[in-house]
Image (cartoon, rainbow, N blue to C red):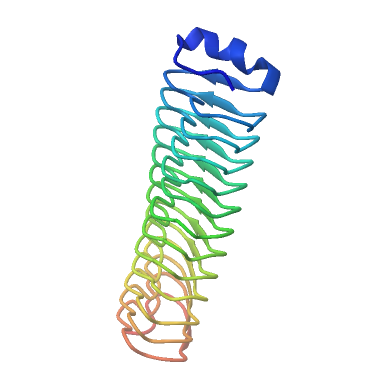
Length: 231
């Protein structure tokens, strides 16, 4: 592939034969055999060599991608440090910043920021899944949803800061602050505003309703429905 040590307006001409579009300083600078890529922004897709069918738009979006394929990164430094992930979508500044695995969707400022080897996650909202590193098959919807989880799998957290402190797998939190302090408790279903807010290690609880089980901390196998029924 021709050297990109040329003005940005020439990149488009050089890339036509490879069905690629480059626009911006050093965008697509190292492409060798990769094809069907679109890189827009300073250093977008800069290190890509053989990766194909990628779209990176924004300052340093997908900058360190090398072999990753079928990725879409939109926003300032979206998917910046991922090198080999495939089939990922990251929308928002620094969304999916470190992703190196497959089939994830990160939408929102720094959504999925720390994810490296995570697979098949859907995060929607600013800081959603921020600390997730290798947890997979999670659905986190809402600002800071599941924010502190690192390796948890099969977690559903819907609502602002729902499951914020959760570190374990197989939990469901629905509602703002639901399961907020849950750290090691497994098998939880907490539905409602502040439901199970202070539970830390209690397991297999089903709490349904506003502030239900709000002060429950270590209780196990509770089934409670109604507003703040357990204290």
